[in-house]
Image (cartoon, rainbow, N blue to C red; front, side, top):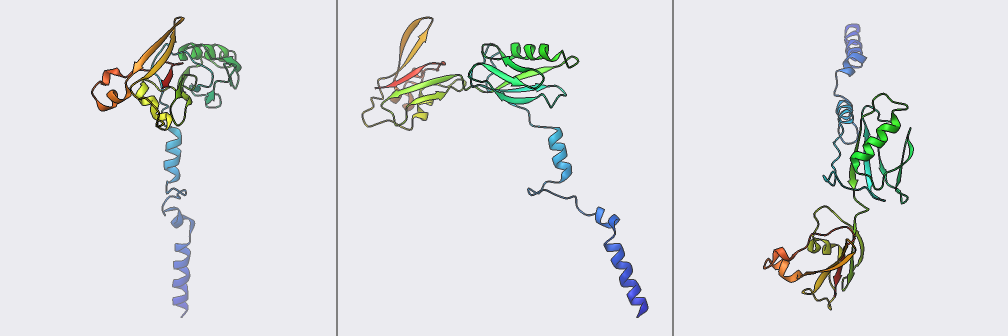
Length: 214
């Protein structure tokens, strides 16, 4: 009897010992990811994708910028451009962003940071082009102002309007554009474009364009 009790006690000590528990599976979070996986993911964040590759793109109010200062996570962050055209960053405070290209803004931020950091390396990426907008008016379900996406055409843009009214003339849609002080009226035959008979009749939009559905 004593031998049996001794064996049970020994097994219990082995089973519940810290060394044996450490050999069990790594703890996981609610998504089933181990702590090692979470640490590796945090050390290797997903790269931010720019919404425009145009080096001459002029940043505007309401755009959203991802600002990365190499090895300075306290300064790096995603910020919106305020209506006054400025952004706010730690160590930099308010800084004019509207009217600058991402490269110009990178240089300006780096110049400001040199007062407190050694050789700062700054990257600015435009993640949302909210300053670039177009407008839809006329015989549509939902007109108004909409963000302009890269390479968006008039026909693609009309998908934002929620459909046409029963009075809409889809053959007489046009785009109003003001360029270099001149107003242009560019026709878009919606029916021919979507039918494939005249795909070249579509128009690539520019910021400030107004699509009119008569």
